[in-house]
Length: 404
Length: 177
Image (cartoon, rainbow over all chains, first blue to last red):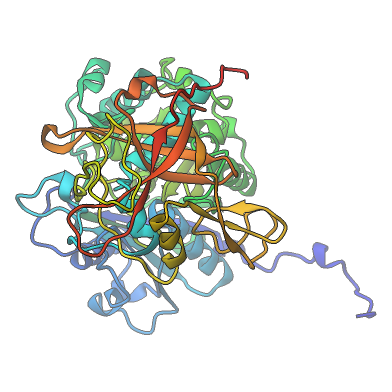
């Protein structure tokens, strides 16, 4: 307001201590799949304890908690009480569907950077499966006469998310000539990776013929284009590089992040199935990290469907727009391929914990703890989350030991 | 479903809607011949947000939202997608559309399949519903559609539901056209 400044604000030295650089210092995953006898809230508590133990942190050292419920809900703010966490500096529920896990790490990183919190647990858990129930009925709700716009959509026959993603995939196929066989290459490659993942629910190899022969769920999707349904929980601990220095695990740096929410669910969207929020979120995250796509060693991309992987690869720039189909069919995927992608089998073959699936495998790879499936280079790991019907996207760039 | 949208169940469509036969509701335009085999709509109740739309549907009129500038928006729109105005009014659409995308969903337990579609209304907005078509292999982007209405047979209180049908004699535009 007319006063002169001795220094340009833009040149003010960053007052953020170097030690507050955010890192992931711990991770915990409960048993996943047909896990009975634990509620979603109990699985969430299990996951947080596992993550703290993994990091070498006492539970009392956690001063932040971000919780994410899956489809069936049940993980609430009361988790803090259940874990015996008192006087937390940060506590909230977060919900951006499949992009939530990456988004939680972003909020936790901001809290750590700012000094608001010192060690933040981010947890997701869900328990949609019931003993004796089929996966196909896992998310079925009690019958009732539905009302309003949502009710009209259901009454029209547009039920569940499978056909909504199928409509997106169909657009991509019609526009670019993408084929079901090309999508199948994603499923086959990820199953091959899953063979090396002891946590994976499906580890037996599949072929393209198996993919094509699997039943149609919502044309063009076959069963093997679709993710699993899992009970389970996963958590990570975000803290500062300084704090992590004397903890139990090699820290995984959170180097950059981004989000994009196109905001056009059930509205005209000429890019529907063609370009997703990844096209903005990915470059933003890479720019924040100061790395180029060429420097990415490992990519863990959200794979609710094979198609989601294909369109995300395009939007991130791994191949030109429209060439995702030929790209994934060109032999670049799978163990030994040029692109280390979804190295744990992803949600198609390992376990379905929303964005925690790609995030957990990214942490494993960045640490170099991938065993027989470990990627040879893992200094820069790209992670995506996707929610809604391509409506919510979040990106993380993580760094292994050689990243700084 | 936006409030409690499900994330990727490995699942068939849930909660099969009641089948609709031709002439089950005299106020609704009957589903085209040959299509009744696949037309299935469920029951739906109106709420404050949808009351005017369902009044239109009962009169076999598909209502859209239109702003004073003349831009059209989807029936559920609260804000004009073009100019951001919030003083939208209901206006009758022509009821014609063209096919944007579609998915054939097999019926559970060997039941008949359904075709779900996105249609671009002639006025511009998109709509998501069932497409009653006997032979899905003939579908192509741009195929002319029209809106028809059907009502679930089994519920006491339910509204007419807009569906897509193929426009008689319609042909998709040629690629590049």
